[in-house]
Image (cartoon, rainbow, N blue to C red; front, side):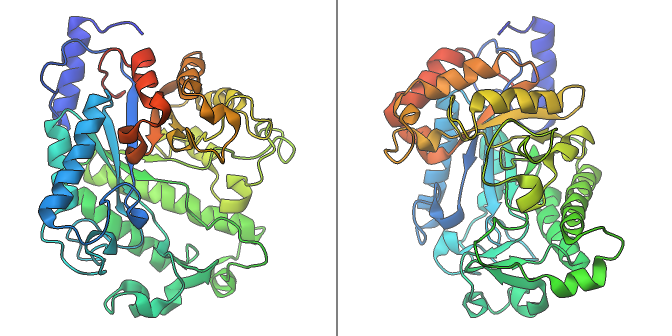
Length: 406
């Protein structure tokens, strides 16, 4: 990548400062704009905190450690999961404190993790995107285990039990308004660089089970040709509204989504990718991600291309150009989600035992100018560096620091 001119570098630095971030000391000249991100997951204590019930000082130290690791790996963006299960990692008036902090849902941890993350990320020259899960209520199906004041207990008619978990019903307009209000509270409070959703909209299919939204469909499904079309309309409405409301509150805050990596297989739709994935986001999650890009309802998209080069059913080398073509000619930025977590896992295909696999991904993606960066799942592996794969990426591709695209 070519280096920025002095004028371009100054402009990029001013853009960063406008969002509250300052360049880290000693970084010198930067490479061309490129997003280099990491997901920092909190659900089930995946990345942070390492376990529930740590003291506030211990939690803070672990969080700052992840930010420092991001800087050390020459990353520039942290996507921090702050609403993993209809809860909050900030003092929300809408939802309870997350159980992943203290071990008890609703218990005040004694500090503000999101506020701290924003301030400390910016102090290190990192951007901070707040990652929300819109509809997941609990990773169990027992409402009595939720704190007594939980909105899902006050409004049991909002909740659907499916696959051993609890979800808010996306087909209810009052649910959509509530979850938007709850998430936008964080946008009002903090100078976030981004608002981020992952791949969970309607839940992934569970064999032999039905997501029971009959009553909502009977009430609100009129005018739609099918239940599937109505469900897609519900998710489309969430995406459009959340993007518009985020911009109304903070015009510089970007709204992005990281969907499942296959929109539709070409055997289902000639516009789809030459893949044979068992899940298709359009049909199974009711997430029409291709439309979101082409209509610019999102500022960026990070499809989770969590497959190796050469995988027959879903080849990374097939999906990158497909998504690049989708993004071509649109204002939506395209980044690629990378499966660092698969490296060295003996249960994965042989390609993931090669420390150079991820580096080859970035080399391939450079052929497509629509690809403006990569995000790695997730922070625990960025720190652990399985098989030296992350170090290889840094050595091969991140020789100079870079600003995220503006």
